Length: 488
Image (spheres, rainbow, N blue to C red):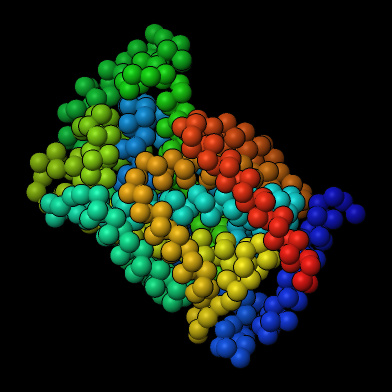
């Protein structure tokens, strides 16, 4: 028997053991998309397949077109200046490698949990747990960033400001969306369609209306930095393209790490694999389509924003009001465009938060099934088979992180942890059996190297905290497994 088959057999044995534990607790598992209920009216832990290709693409876009495009561009501009344009392109390449790795893993193993499940199946339990733990750390921080970004745009649109007001409004948003997600996937999917539609209209409007302002300011804000491209070697070119007063290459890589997080919403498609119809066909199509749309929008919006007002101005308003694109839209001098941009930002942030609550709760559900988290969180409730307990726990954690009030802190922490998560995704993809591969081995290899290469370019205190979190998680995992084995 080959090594991959042995690993798969061991993972299946662990999964079967988890099933038996649920049966002891009065929950009877089913196969496929059906549901049963125990005496408390709580269903089994199988989720119904209710999402098609279109719905999966919209879920991916809803997860990406939010904090990344409305906030993180400004954060990255503060790090790297106009070279944020290069960071957007480099991050897209890294994200494409990771997206393809996620697609083939999800197609071959379509269950909720994403790389947490893939790590257990194709790597080993500690690495599988680390993937799930990093996803929870990364995306709860992203959720807090989305909530704060929503509050910043909403308050700025009505002429209000202040950290306290931003935090209160962010907490209200977390509470309302937690209630929606807890009600089930069908209702969440309908809300997501509305959110993504409004966001796309706002972004396309921003780009079209902003073209004259971008053309007028391009010479001052962009062209002067790239004019010497043919006269200097690459390193000198990057240093010259950076106007933040630091090491140009270092700042570029730091900004790329920050921008990479902005693309990673496609992973939500993989984490919802158990709820997608025809997953082997639907998931790869949905992830690739989502990536193409996202890259086009990110490149267009970043160019318009930097060319129109400059990287320094964009970074300043991100720190002060957390609403950079709205400020840029006001500079266009076209009545109403700032309101459209603000409305699109508000809906986008809510969409990201909604999709993060969905994805995070499914990973927590998967970890609870195996006993890596409290088993009670794996129960499904109601007619729509919602993991209500897991959703509520995630909502509470996101709300707690939003209390920090710092968008840059939460986003930077998310950058490190999500890069570690996707490094494990690519490592798992390298272990796929030949018959399960959809893409060449160099795709996950490039993804693995690029993720590990970028992870440690964020602030040193951020990655030190991240490493400490990994260590704490592994201690928890070891203790939880010993306790579970003692009482099995």
